[in-house]
Image 1 (cartoon, helix red, strand yellow):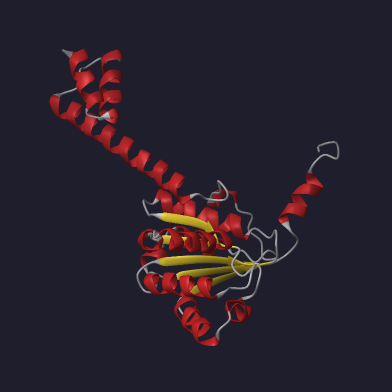
Image 2 (cartoon, rainbow, N blue to C red):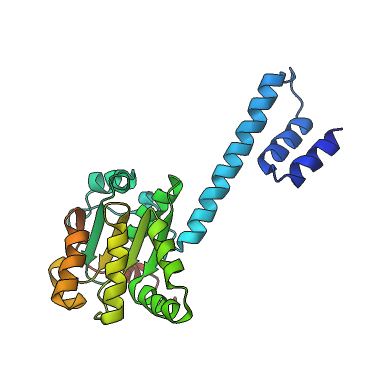
Length: 249
């Protein structure tokens, strides 16, 4: 009977229940579980299993640049990272308030790592996150417009609780990219949160976007309810390279 029950659990994809029931059969207890305790064990195990698999899918679908966590961050006044501010961001309150976050700083100062850490924490909280490089994002949207899948791609972006656009402003925007960015920001304004990282200070974004009317519309929706972090100091890549043994290639 137990073998039949296990097989039915597996066929119904009740993997958490399957594992818990199998473990209970293999474990010797001083007192057997009551019916209520067994039901609680099976349901709790199934809930945990589905929750954990949902987080794994969310992490995979987010496509983070780094497997970063809040615990791995290095806090210091010199770097411009305030521990209290980052922990407030990590608890997801700014996402629930539909606010944005702008992270700026020179190359190598940890912008992408910080954004990835906040995004990973959002996934752990059950939120939908998408991480993308700005150049790649707009190139993909141009291709999608040609093959007729642009609306589908934009709807996917709109549904994300948190969108992370990395390396914003490395390349000047053309007309197609400006239009796509305006549509993305317009769709998400007041509904979802966006994190943008850039080597350029925010005051230079207007010129990079180009076309004054469009730039005004984008920045008005993006900046007015956004928190800001400006990273400073020496490039972390250079710092890590200095610590590496000289005989390592």
